[in-house]
Image (cartoon, rainbow, N blue to C red; front, side, top):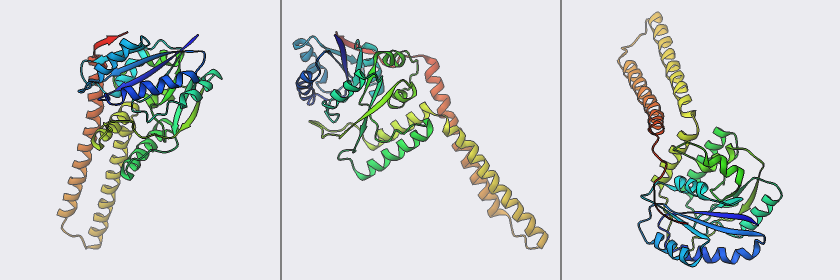
Length: 306
């Protein structure tokens, strides 16, 4: 019998755990021929999430729990689950049931047809603010152009075959971007569509600041396009300088040359701003290299229940 592993990153989800587990229990009858394995990763929650998970483990030995020593982020939680999963295929989903469990039935059907990556594609973004939707769309448009794949309305909700899990688990990157990496690995891929549901309990843990940090981190981690912007910026400043130079020569030859202090100040400000921005971008990449070469673990497991 094939094993399906359900990987669920959790951060302060004590109110959602029970609802999630009951919803998955109801789903099991729609997945004949599959043995279920539940992997909950507590990402350093400050509430009673791990206590709730431990209670589930005592009731159902198919429930396995991993608790980080502190908050390492959702990406670390996902990859911890991938490395611990034993399933022939795995599904990554959130604990708040915004990823509808019934979509898993369609994902498994695609997997049985021979697909190795089944992407969950949102048909809507739920009850997000207009500003949040605009920001998310802008970010995924940028990422789509950077990796050459349409990532609009993607999510962490997806099914992966064991061979894909093995490849992803073996990556040594510290700053991972799961949504993009599932495209990057290739393999036979398809998608299913789903509507984002309302949270069953609790509130979102994503503020605008955390989303912005997440976007910048993943753009830096998955692309060197910002480094190319330095060259573009340099050419723009060079072009502006050449234009000012030509204007100064023409004015001098016509005898209409004016005092050059404003021009000099503009050039100094532009050049200094461009240099500082360039150093900031290069410095960010150097910092990422520094983090990588230190070779610290992506996460630290404080406790686990198998």
